Amino acid sequence: MRCRRVRQRLSAFLDGELPNALRDRLAAHLDSCVECRATLDRFRRLAPVLESSPAPGVPDWLPERVLARAQERLERRRRGLFDPLAAFAQWLALGMRGMRPAVTAAALVGVVLGSLMGWTLSRKPVAGSTIAASSRETLESLYGLDALGGAPADSLEIAYAELTSAPQAPPAFFAETKGVR
Image (cartoon, rainbow, N blue to C red; front, side, top):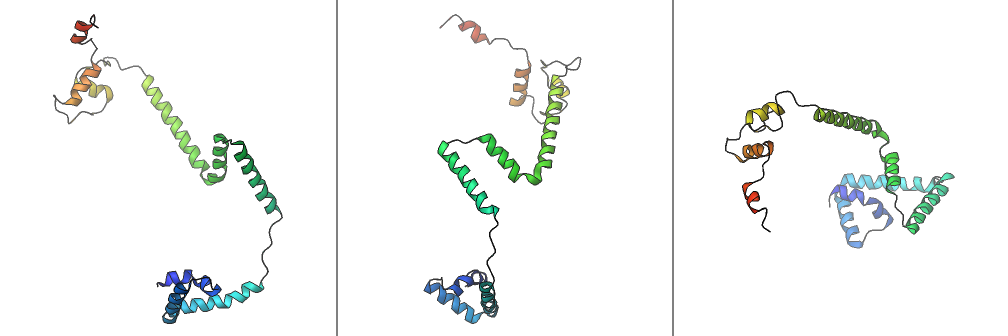
């Protein structure tokens, strides 16, 4: 047995709570390991001190608080109600005490970036550039980046960009079959 496992079970060993086979293995380890035997001796010296000291008292407010919390949960279960807003508020109150400034800053950054994105999308296009651009150079100058830089002229990306940016005319086959059902 490893020393760490033995030390975890020393209290149960002293109290006689271990099965016989495990107790025998632990005793064999204690016979051969000086460090674990010293830890066991410290446990044996500590036991009378703990037994002679009085148990700490229960605060007066604790039973009332525990019973009130249990009653609240029981009533919620009986009604079958789950209020997600109340659960979120409780999560914020208990779990996020130290994180409120960080969450507030993240929300503020999100609002600012969202506003900035909306503002840039609502701006009028620069004179001379139109959304209906059909060439690669116009697309690059319109968006200010070279998204299709490595794509050859006959690639699927270029064809898609030209199809989506060119003015749409109905396909020829649609005009021919419009009257046929």
